[in-house]
Structure formats: C-alpha cells, structure tokens
Amino acid sequence: MRRDGSRVFHVTDAEAGLTLFEAIRLWVPEQTGAETKQLVMQRQVQIDGNLCLDTRRSLKVREVVKILAHSVAAPPSDADIQIHFADEHLVIVEKPSGMTTMRHEEEVHWSARRKQRQSTLDELLPRVLARELGATSRGSRGRTAKPKRAQQEGSFDARRWRVIPVHRLDRETSGLMVFARTTAAERELVEQFREHSIDRAYRAIVLGDIGEQTFESYLVRDRGDGKRGSTTEPESGQFAVTHVRPLEKLTGHTLIECRLETGRTHQIRIHLSEAGHPLCGDPEYRGGLHLKPQPDRSGAPRLALHAAELGFQHPVTGERLRFQAKLPKDLADFLKRLRRSEKEKL
Image (cartoon, rainbow, N blue to C red; front, side, top):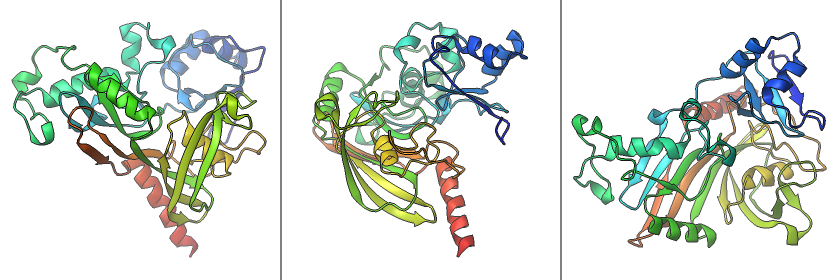
C-alpha cells in the first residue's frame, strides 16, 4: 500500500485475460464480490491511469491497475463542453479533461445505460449544439444565435445535429478539437490532417529544464515493452516530428509549447519522455525503453497537456481559421503552485 492509501497491481502473463472483477478478487481476497463491484462503481479503480467503471473489462499483460483510497471526481458533462465556433459544415469545441473523444471499438455495443455512465464527446456534442445553436437566425462568422427556451426544450433531431470526429485527443488531454458536420467537410478536413497542413500547438508542463529543439523519430505500437515508442527501424514505424519551445522555466519544471508537424498517437508524450522530460501527471510515459522511469512528484492534478491553438482552412469557404484556448483552471492552478514554489526557493 502506498502513502496515499492506494494499491497498485501489475497484470502478469498468468493474469492476462481475467476480468477486472476477477483480478481484484484475486489480489484482494478479503474483499467480497459486492464490495469489489462497489469499489469499481464508486470510481476508485484506474487502469493505466484511466478510470474504469466496467467490472467485466478484460485485462492485458503489463497493464497497471490502481485501487484508490477515495473516489475520484465525477466525469465532465455536457455543461463542461465549450463551443468556440460552429456553422453548417463544422464545429470547434474545447474538450474538457477526463472525457473520451469517441467510443473505443469494444465499447460501441454497450447498452445505453452503460454509455451514460461515461459519455463521450461525440455523443454529448449534438445535444450541446442543439441547445446552444438551435435558432435559425445567423450570428457572426456563420455561428447561429442562441435559441429561445421553447426551442431548446423541443424535440431533438439527431440527424440535424450529428457530428463526425476527424481526430482525437487523449482522455486526460484538454483543448481544442474540430468536428465535421457533413461528409464533404469530413473528407476535406481529413485530407488536411493527412497533409499535415493543420496548425496545432499544445501547452505542456514537463519535468526538468528543457531547451528549444525538434524531436524526430519513427513511432511503433510496441517498442518492446508493450508501450508505444520510437524504433530504430524506420520501415516499421510512422515518422513523427514535434517542435518544442520553452515558455517559462521553473525549478525542476518547464512550461513549454509543442507544435506538431505530424499527429501520431501519444506523439508529444513519447518524444518528451524519451528525451528525459516526461509530462507532469503522465502515469504511462516516464522514460524510454532503456531509460529508468522517472518518478512524478509534481503534484499535477492530471496529464499536464492542453491543445491551446488550432488553425486550418475552412473546408468549404477556404477561409483560414485560427482558434486559441487558455489553460483550464486545473492546470492554471497547478502552474501557480509551481510558481509559488519557485518564489519560496529564491
């Protein structure tokens, strides 16, 4: 048991394939079946840093299961989704941390009741659009005006407000995302992502003192220990480029800007961890394949990564659009704490 009262278990080859319920009963035999189910439903179990509410979730080798001493906060809801821009072709939203962009393949066939316990952004966004943009009158930059309450409370036409994901953000990453609202806009936006012509900049807080530099590597799904990472064999990986610029240096930490040339899964987290500067609050990437994992004593409330800037060409009008989103409160407060610690040490 750790100082904070949590317990951590690493899934072995022998335990792989067990359900979460079966594994917890194995690890904590003094706990009854009812107590185990209650532990999961009360939001006290994480897998690889992500909350899990599914007792039937099948475990994989090397996954890390953490049983928390206390329940974590409830997941964000549609009230936490902020719309920055919308027209009939696309919508720009600010995703809150703790919300998945879309369903994983194994979750698609969940019952409606199970899905409601942990809704995804693409499931919640249509109703947010209908509520906030349901009037027919047009506002500035193509955005529709807010509807009257009678319109808000009317019937919901899912087809009218459907959204189509064209990229993802990790569950714990907050920030700007674009969704298409038509198949034509989807095709054009996907092509822009494919051509790497979309401007994306992130704010991150990392361990150590890092200077301005560019990381280039080939990323693979399994670098040799079951995690994504870089490979020395270019033909087996995807080329990834991340430009890093320090914005503020603090004792033991640095606030940085990351600009992407490519958009590979976990690209920023991998490049920085392999360089010896893992993100604060990242439970998974703490070092490279042959680097000793670095402990995280930062006290970060979650993964310290925020999609702060997004720029692209409108898929229909051709207008160049650019949006910015400041650090959300949890990361802004975390940064303030680091600044206070910096001053106390001077």
